[in-house]
Length: 219
Image 1 (cartoon, rainbow, N blue to C red):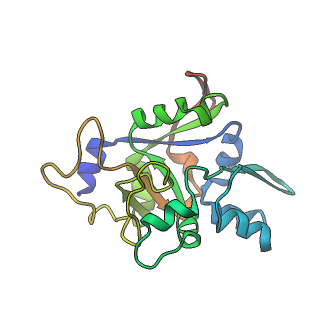
Image 2 (cartoon, one colour):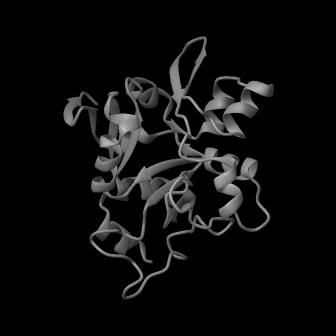
């Protein structure tokens, strides 16, 4: 795939965050879980439980002179599901750590809206950031990767995944019939390795979404 094709298809992308998290994101950026744990000084068994294992519940990080930061649960994954689909000799611990080194964006608003309406999220307010894709690429091009699956889900017929799951833009497959359809786009996730510490510069809008209603928040 070329960068021009990516931008033509997805000029904007979205990130869903916990309610009330925009001030923290605006101050510290949209960091990967690994970098958040570094920033908040989390170590030892507490770090392992967040970074290297399944999180059955979301975790709120706190530290002096820093606003609270929420690390979401990863309930849609399980060790048993990962064992069925992991390749390249990876084990569940490896995959949790792979994902926790990235920040994730949805490229398709319809897919995000389905997630917002899902039982796990519909009853709680969510923060949604709309991002200028080109501006993000211009600053973080070397760290951007594309993914054809929901990499954090193993509940419904888990897709195979491994070292080649996240591809550079130029390595992502292109050509007739390979990009996908309007119903199910082949690019599911855009990720940035390590996170986006200056994400506020690329944010076009911020919404608080609750029970299907969106309220704009000040940038």
